[in-house]
Length: 129
Image 1: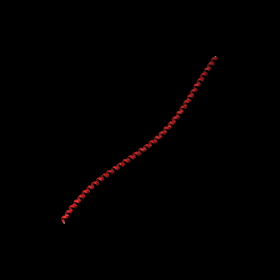
Image 2: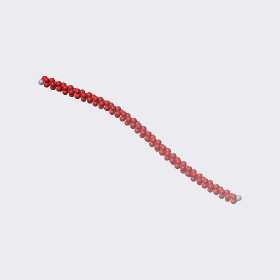
Image 3: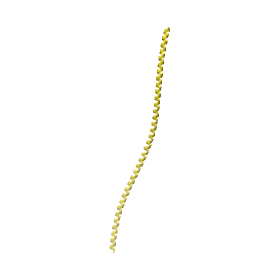
Image 4: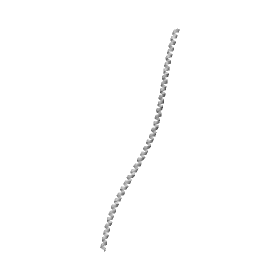
């Protein structure tokens, strides 16, 4: 019985030793996994910070683009208004030139009529003398 007890005790100690080794390996694996998780979380935290910084830069760039687009739109409207004004000025100048030409033609016709009237008056005057 003592021999059986000694054999049973040895088997129990061996099983206990194997169980402790498995537990030690499991604890080591869990510690390694926790370390990897911590490293991954640190990398993820850095990536989140970079993403936040990029989002902030993107927001600033978007605001600058929006401001530039508004400025360009304003400049375009101002240029269109200036072109419209130039077109109106050119049309007014053309109208004035046309009226000046009409006035010049009318003036020449009036001058010819006056010259003809003067000529008739001179002939009548010669007849009176």
